[in-house]
Image (cartoon, rainbow, N blue to C red):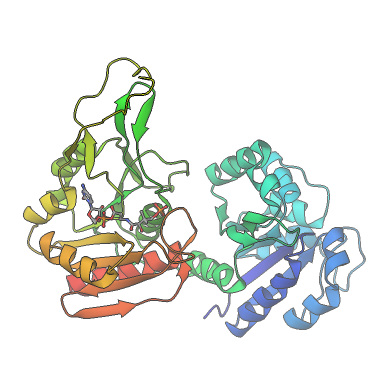
Length: 398
Ligand code: PMT
């Protein structure tokens, strides 16, 4: 419930503006007060009357419009807001926010507010991946602006890829977690592993896998927001580290092993979402390997240490150990087998062949397996999966 909370929702001129109506409706059902600010372009896609009816308040569009009460609207809204949310947030809005441009009602209010800001970006894939947008995003994140999404999928312009606005339910959950964060992990030390490992072949080649780190980073961020002291041991990835989390970079499975052996005994909860390589090259060539035309090229691989198993062998009293099982067949059997062999308390079974699950995507479909049974979860954002895993880990601790 969000009684007594005041949400100022900015709606910009992206086609996902129609989904913002559902955000308002959901917020009202949670008893939040909602003021909507629309950009001129947004009003071309959705009528202000729709938002007025859903929020029971006048919608602000024009900074200089005459209003029923005398106050400087962009300042009074900026001050009243417990949170400012922009959904959809276009590339243009992100650029203005990153550079302090205040040329309309929404951008002036955003610049004036001291409230937390949450943006739900929505745009074409090309615009989302453009260097300018990504740089603006990094600037905003470094200033504490929170983001939800974007997800991947079919876009209104006909393209398929990232840039799709998160669903209203996810946006409202993100708002709730900012306004009413759970603090049920205060005082706990949580270590999360994330991302792939890289096994060198020669100075220019390596073996790796498709892990993006998204699952592990979502876990680290969620645990931090719930009050835990979080260490994130991360293979090479291309996503920004969550604020307030200690990041320890690793490359190969051997370096992950070393790092974990140093730290595992001091943790209360360890969650191993990384995808470490099971094998490494026996002899890493010092120089670039030359092509031997016509000859088959044979690479000898040797087994890497099983890090999760080694952590399981050093399990401390009261400690909760969580692993992931990335499977393509016999998912439940294999996951249960790994739960036993690695001496874990919770195994997150991940069928990585299912659409919207596993490597690279923003969503996941998992089953939580403990020694007492299995709980299948529907497809949800990796952040939501993270919250379920943390809930289960806390239950196992008690
Ligand atoms: O990073 P994303 O793109 O978001 O993708 C998420 C994910 C698919 C990587 C993640 O959800 C996941 O399933 N991670 C586990 C990947 C994996 O290595 O699974 P596995 O079944 O091979 O290993 C089982 C467990 O042992 C894992 O906890 C793994 O971290 C660990 N392991 C594996 C091999 C090894 N040599 N040492 C290990 O510790």
